[in-house]
Length: 183
Image (tube, rainbow, N blue to C red; front, side):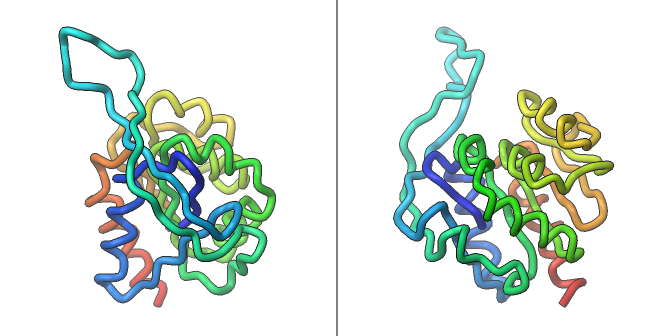
């Protein structure tokens, strides 16, 4: 589970706590092994003060136990990539991209929410795939060679993508199905 500062809290913590319930160890990785800040993203539900974009507020903290540079893709059953603003920055990390690409090329399951699609595009592992994401990241998906589909959740082979934290249950359930089929 790659993270960085401004990783979306709900995207991340749902899978972080849910996957171990089925016996999977979640290894949190970051640019460095250290504590990271998560954020909460939502369009405030106040019709009197409309917002066109999501508002960002501080969330919880999460510790990355390993740096991207120290990852070995052979050690992992798959990858869960959450959203938030972190993917905008960490997608430039060559070690992260190499690991994600190697996991995809090894035929291991990958789940992705929201802005996490930016990492999959940077890792060059969604060409020819059908994906979804938040509409404002549709171009990121297309630049990665994927076909953006305007749906809440899209499953394409071992890849499961969702718009955002509202699809946590469906995305994690489909990801777990794929992980268990690969055991």
